[in-house]
Image 1 (tube, rainbow, N blue to C red):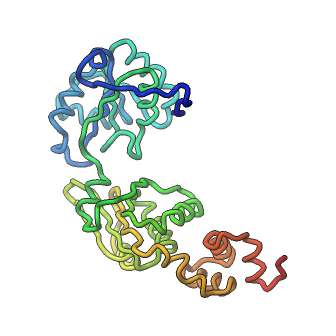
Image 2 (tube, rainbow, N blue to C red):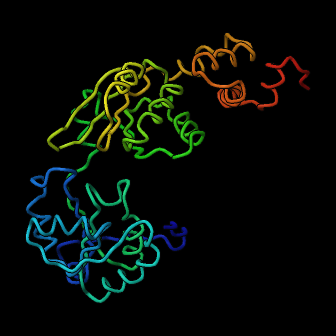
Image 3 (cartoon, one colour):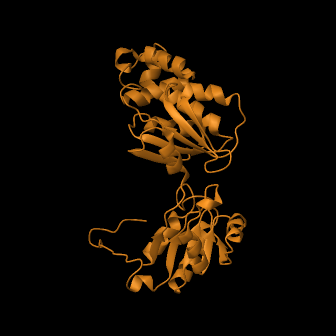
Length: 305
């Protein structure tokens, strides 16, 4: 949603439960359990029963929740693949004076799930957006991790591509804040190996698995230790990754490199991260903020202007 210009800017006040805002159609953002149905709040159940429609990420999945709590409200599918085609329909419903509750499959709407576009569209049309508190996997893992919970930086899922994943992690390597990621079981090792290369094998982290469910598990240790452990066990369930912040932001990419020549710096990156010279040259150039061609020339003993 584009910010208004200085000429158009104005303060807008939403009074969710008093005044005219409370009489029109409203959009409720309703969190759902991340595994244990007992975590559903009384208010969430009452809201899902009271609204005219439920916009659900997966209507079949949500139906199981509705059946459990004897909720018979009409459902409309709303997910990442039909967001744009559904927005106008949902806004029309809200503008007609009817209310909608938006839910994802688990946890908070909009947090690594659909929802943001609907919130923006509702606000653009003067419709009140009312959030309900509730379950969230990232915060649940964070408070039990033993790593300082504030400040923290929530990232969610990393990019799928290997190089994009590493580039993203490189942007985070010097953050002092505790880092929070989500990951699926089939991508977990790939993600942790990338973290091992970028953050270093001694960075401390905690994996939260199957949170709130019968087989809930926390795995705590340094990256190298956790990678070794994961080679011995099957990976099941969704994971939250809590990574300790960098206590010494200079240590990974600035403290040491000033003592190295370009060619020695490339060689060190290759040895530490087990990557090719091409990848190491790219990383050295990024760390030092100099052209890749300059690093390439130094490593291959070529002339550089």
